[in-house]
Length: 122
Image (cartoon, rainbow, N blue to C red; front, side):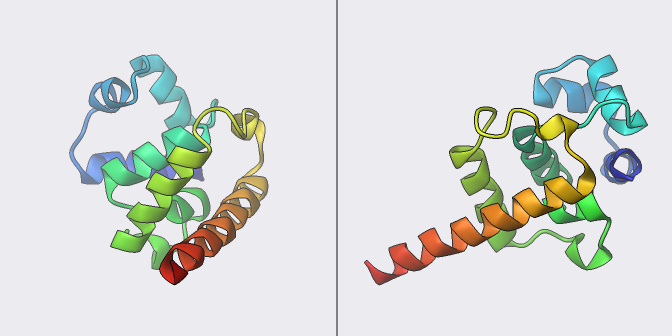
């Protein structure tokens, strides 16, 4: 579950919930709700957490161990998603299921790849 993966990643980095909350610009109780599963982070917050924990968004969402370590390419993708989506585009992301989130990220990855190919041709 997402909350459990957030807790494990935070503990692996030896960070407190207070530290994460300050990094995200939210209260500690709000972050605690992410770890407890009472609240789901929006796409921008997921990207920030993945970057902080040095994991992929895919791993946070799916728990797929193959996606655990984040690559340079994954960091570029997360920055691109943050730049193009941020808090505006997918405002109800927090209410989405894990499967809907996974589909959204897969779609964003396809769009990112298309944009990268266009830039490579220029």
